[in-house]
Image (cartoon, rainbow, N blue to C red; front, side):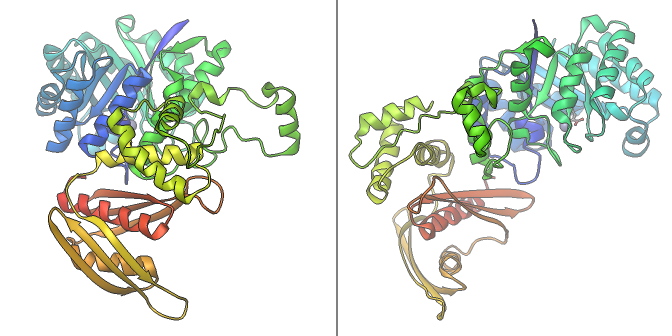
Length: 507
Ligand code: KIV
Ligand code: ZN
């Protein structure tokens, strides 16, 4: 079977979507997941778009050992210089350069004639190829471009040294039949096509990104560009978990395979959702809570008789554990570590120390600690907490008084290094009062309060409450999270984390 390369652009197209910005530590955490997944190419960012973007592409290039690392660049010398500077230390660097090819984009965005676009492509691909033998060329808005122009530009790019030709559905406009035809047409008509690999990059505006990518494969594409959880501009990009599992589940139909270790999918998805501070939609294919749940009596009956009646893939294949073992207050460190191992978290001794104390606190308050609680504790204290700044304000204690006939009051005591602070404030409910008291202490710089979300980690009244707060300032998002059986405490922790990040200016 032909091997399809998976080009992950979570850290570039995914990260540039609203509310999904990540700081460098978070990007490195995602890059680690991508390596575990065994993706072929990691698009680490758009190096010229700012110093933080440059630094993250550079760091990712230095640490990633098992995947190619790419930076995006417009077809401009200054972009290509910076992209190369950022990726040159990678084991396998790639420069990804693009220019728009649709009449609309050429006329109104670039203000260039088709001939000028061809010339620019020739010069810039050749310029990139002097730095690097691995050059990808993308014809932006390919699906609204003239097919013969696409064929010409593909020939020009290949002759100038491009090794990968990407034909994106930039605005999520095409259909599977059109995409298959487009890829097949260009491969059949462009001179030199056999020297390059063809790639698809689809957006999900009409909900067809995965279907269009698979159709591109049927037309001859051998690279799919996608993102974890389908993050990306507007309605997102092709979702990696969906496209990979479609190829695996329907290998009989597509007759291709990927190198993805599918058992890592759930973990990677959860890490990314945690970082951007969003829960997976319940019905999200592959990774949503309901993706493997059978509710109706007829379905349950069928699954009990034979799982294959209603299950086209097993949860285990994507790394979801269904043997929901429960731990309790008598479970020791060894049982805790063993269960974490079973769930796919291979914790170091230091990480076990960090989580076990919290586990004991939770086990004391709750009768049972489920896998979902355990995952929330681990992702909070390992994947999330260490991504947050160690500095900043910490909660020491708080006290609230509230009722439905008086104004809520909160007294809050914070610590920052050796300093201690205390404030009392009123509010419209205990959380508002707590946030007002925090504001009075910190006096944060001006920001917009975008999101307050609370979710339970498991079923039952004694569940942990996981709170996410998102603030924004200067078009960057600052996320904070808190986890506790007490939702006022988790709210305070989440707000403090978001404010600490805002004050440290590390989005
Ligand atoms: O959607 C798009 O066209 C892109 C290109 C820059 C590859 O993201
Ligand atoms: Zn895109």
